[in-house]
Image (cartoon, rainbow, N blue to C red):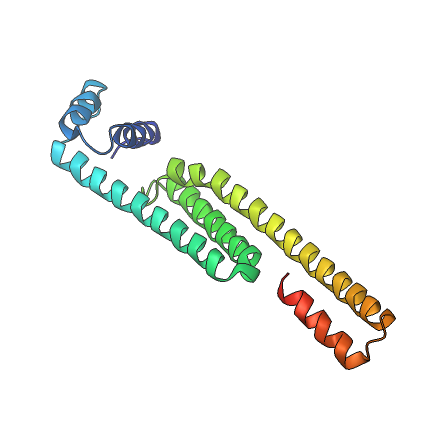
Length: 167
């Protein structure tokens, strides 16, 4: 089993090489004094590539859900951020107990992206609230204008609804 600095190096090297050059990575590891077999590096490479693929797929699902459930985007992003933080904490525990189940460096690299997504969700929430207030104010204003022009309440409401459909 590689020490943490060895795992960090192999993770970075495999990602940098786009998960190719397993023989070269194995030779470099052996040159650094870590005795590993090519087959072990190959298995580790495949597992790491699969984990990264799963993280990307999950991120894409979250983005898709945010698009579909636009009003709920902030809640979805909060949930995603909570899940990511939980995964990072689990990975830290795994690292502390040397189980090697998760790659901490990969999880930590996702946090800035999730933070940006969280900020985007907050902006979206603020924009939605602002839009709602503008529409409410516009409805009141249209009704006032329609009433001032002599329309009864029913006709004024008709124009409010017609006007708001365009917003």
